[in-house]
Length: 267
Image 1 (cartoon, rainbow, N blue to C red):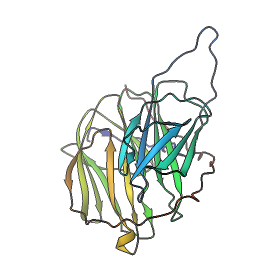
Image 2 (cartoon, rainbow, N blue to C red; image 1 turned 120 degrees about the horizontal axis):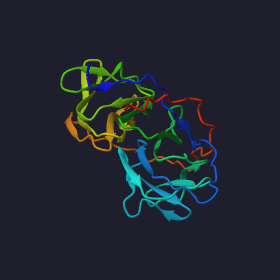
Image 3 (spheres, rainbow, N blue to C red; image 1 turned 90 degrees about the vertical axis):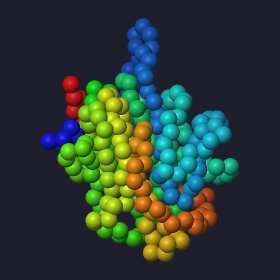
C-alpha cells in the first residue's frame, strides 16, 4: 500500500458562488482567521486574466496566464465580487460573488474555466480546504470540447506503487515525493514530480479543449499547485488561437451543487 491514502469523498465544488455556514458575531471581540485565496486560470483561449475587486486590480501588472495558479493577496468579506477581465480589456468576462466565508482557517480555491456545454462563456468552480494535519489534493477536471480523446488514466506513484486518481475527488497524501502521470489509453501525455508537505493544500487541474479542427484546439494538459514542476512533457505543436468575443458571456450566478465533501482529518 503506498503512502497515498485515498479518501472516498466528493469534492465540494460549487458553480459561480461560494456559500458556507452563516457568520456568528463574537460577544467581546472579532475572531480573525488565516484564510488564503488561490485562483487558477483554466480557460483555453484567454491568454491572461485580470482580477478586479472594487476597482482594484488584484493581479497588479502581471495578469493570470492560462494554465497557471496564483495566491491572491486580498481580504474577502461576504458580498464581495471578483470581476475577471481579459488583460487590457474593458469588458468583464464574468463575476464571482462571495456569499459567506468559513469560520475557520482555510485555503479557498477558485478555478476560472470554459463552460463545457458552450463554445463561449466563463464559469467558476470553488472549493474550501478545511484545516488538516495531512496534505490534501483536490483533483479537478475542466477539460472540454467536442472531441473525445479516449479513456483517461490519471495515477500517482510514490516510488513503489501506482494508485489511480479520480476527478472531482479529494485525497489525503502523506509527506513525500510522488510522480503523477496523465495518459490517454497507453499514450503518455505528461508526467510531473510532486512533493507533498504536511498540512498543505494542493490542486491537480486537468485543462484543455478538444475540437475536430486543430486550429481551435488547446491540447490536454494538467498542473499541480503549489509545486509540481514538469518532469516529462511531450512536445506540443504551436497552436493558432482564434480571437473570440466573450462580451456576451453568461455571468449569472448559479446555486452551489449539493456535493458534500467528507474529508477525514488525519492525525
